Length: 341
Ligand SMILES: *Cc1c(COP(=O)(O)O)cnc(C)c1O
Image 1: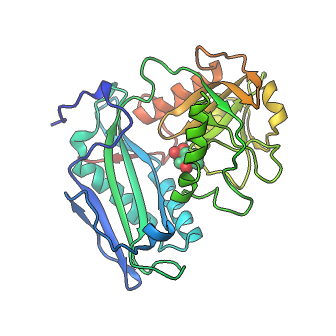
Image 2: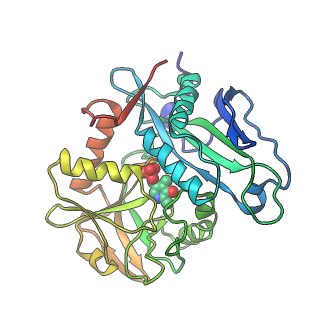
């Protein structure tokens, strides 16, 4: 039985659900893992995560499709990305197949929290890991905890997707050869000041440039960026300091194989931005959120798509990818994982 929740008015926030998955790494190996009703974690005061921020996470969603199935979208890519992150942070790697299993089991146990088709709401899934044993001298932890919890979240856009405004900040997100390409908690900790400051100044998000030259577009604090040229080519910045968004990789495929558009991943100079027709942010939370304006130290770039609605190509990309996720459009092989109740 579906839970009695006002799905349409849910926000993007934490709501406790019934079960979460927990597995511990100790003495060089992972245990079997278990589902628990306890949402609290008790760890030592000197746990590596608390002192040296050795933690990483993933984010994906479960959807109710048009024919009533519960599915999640490309969880194997989240599994691989978390493994890459763990290697970069010297953490134990959670096996990729067990990651997908843990996601499936956690959703199964909370299946009544998967919002109905058409509500716009979804079940957000948060896998994460942290160094859990006491570490004083700076080094990686010896013990780790991997967990997965879920939380129903509301439609990202209430009352239509209104274009947002980005500013080019004086802060950097990721250093060359740093950790910008992995989903480490530390990348978010250091972005908080920049986003609070952006909001104070009246902007929605920061458009970070590459920190080495400050001439090339990278991404925002938590979403990749796509552009559409005036002749309908979809362009996304190529850089090894941006986080490889699964949504962005999927959208580039959709552009090429479903919409018959040209799709290019290449360096994007900031001085080209004024020539694009459309711009949008992409990530699991919103899929695509349209950008109407970019402000660089007082200089405004207003995209031709304007501040009222999504650009035309952005809208087609959005409708196609969400159609694939919700089961109204046939998905490429392997993109959709059906979760049996
Ligand atoms: C998670 C994340 C994204 C979006 O990735 P998806 O896999 O599409 O959800 C983009 N940028 C950053 C910095 C992120 O952490």
